[in-house]
Amino acid sequence: MASLGLVGIIVLVVLGVVLPALQVLAQFNPELGMEQAKAVATATGGPDVKLFNVLDFGAKADGTTPSAINFIRAFKEACNHPGKAMMVIPEGEFVLGSALFSGPCSNAPPLMVSFSGTLLPQANTQTAEDADWLTFQSIDGLILSGKGTLNGQGEKTWKPECDSCPRAPASLKLIKVNNTIISGINSVNAKGFHLMISVSDNMWIDGVNISAPAESPNTDGIHMSKSNKVKITNCRIGTGDDCVSIIHGSTNISVENVDCGPGHGISVGSLGHYDSEADVFGITVRNCTLRNTDNGARIKSYKNDNPSRAAGITYENIIMDHVKNPIIIDQEYGQVGSSESSKVSIEDVHFTNIKGTSVSKVAVDLLCSAANPCKGVTLTDIDLKFEGTEKANVPFSSNCTNIKVVYSGIQNPPPCPP
Ligand SMILES: *[C@@H]1O[C@H](CO)[C@@H](O)[C@H](O)[C@H]1NC(C)=O
Ligand SMILES: *[C@@H]1O[C@H](CO)[C@@H](O)[C@H](O)[C@H]1NC(C)=O
Ligand SMILES: *[C@@H]1O[C@H](CO)[C@@H](O)[C@H](O)[C@H]1NC(C)=O
Ligand SMILES: *[C@@H]1O[C@H](CO)[C@@H](O)[C@H](O)[C@H]1NC(C)=O
Ligand SMILES: *[C@@H]1O[C@H](CO)[C@@H](O)[C@H](O)[C@H]1NC(C)=O
Image (cartoon, rainbow, N blue to C red; front, side, top):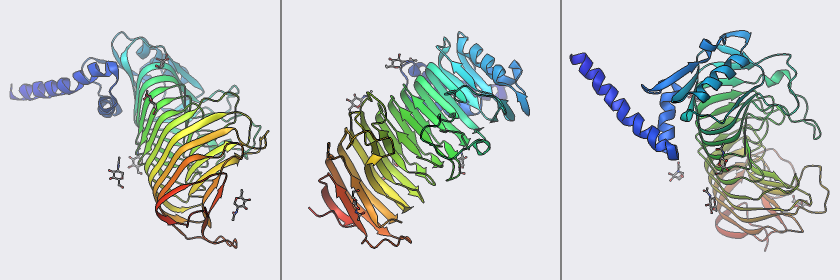
């Protein structure tokens, strides 16, 4: 009786915590979703959650048997389950070709995916052009959580960078998914982007580890477009391209406590690449560290005729550790320019409390468009010092083109002449 009583109390406590959480999640509360993600990580979803383990659908954790179809079957059943559903990917190595996990789902949201194992791509499968590796699509309410690893084995397919080559497959693509939590998980050696987010609303990505070598081509860590309210926290990203890249149509994005390096920095852009790009606004990058990266806080646009606006961008409390181009706006990015100057207007941009070391002499490099000079750019408390081997015969300095910066507080390097 005594032990039953204890179990009873535990069950009550679990119910007491989990049930209200699930109810409130009908309106999606990210904090409660993140709580729930901890239980999802260990595949303990609560008493009324039905588990859909990929092994029960014929997937083999043997590191050789192609199992994408088995994963898709497990997903489909979870997605169509009339109650709370959790797809479970247990420990072990699974081999998967390209897989689409597509809703709409009729389970009680959110659909939970407990991810522990390691996924490897199927060798020698010709993926269709533009097909990514694992795609979640058209789902409202998704929690993907666990210590699992996506190993894209990009080292077998990486080719030198090339402007006209098709984009290599992203390891994990999220498209048209709303109200999503991604917690934990690891991505190594993606063939293309590690995580790619598009046409999605309300997503929180926490505690994700991303790694690929500095030389790996176009392996952006988290790349997003046409999405609103994406929050990225506590991630460790080292890769061969941008750690985070925020392109057209991204709004209300926050990046906090992210360590980046190696990589090309935390970037807004490239913008002005495609016709009719939607504006970018409400971007906050805060409390991040960049280490040995090729850029730090960067905004970049093509020298192109496609007009759009990027506004309300803040980089705050950033530590630069031996970064090349710690603070950079580059409106002459890329080779495909079709115009004399970029038609992207950059406004209301704030670089605040940025400290550390630069390996380039021109540590603040602001190159704006002649057609669209940058407006409302402030630099506050910038304290960088040169620590590098660059031999260029220029002082440690700032360079400003087509921009009038408003300075306050400490300025190292010294401001551009008025
Ligand atoms: C996601 O939210 C957007 C905007 O609220 C809505 O238009 C879209 O249909 C939603 N998508 C899904 C898959 O629920
Ligand atoms: C990410 O890396 C850190 C440091 O190596 C580790 O403590 C953490 O468990 C990793 N996260 C996951 C999801 O495996
Ligand atoms: C996004 O940001 C804009 C401007 O900051 C704000 O007006 C809008 O309500 C935000 N949208 C959401 C869904 O948070
Ligand atoms: C960010 O850093 C500041 C000071 O460096 C600190 O006061 C604040 O709590 C931090 N915020 C987060 C979300 O970690
Ligand atoms: C400053 O930027 C302009 C425009 O890109 C460039 O021509 C010039 O060489 C730069 N000056 C230094 C010192 O880098």
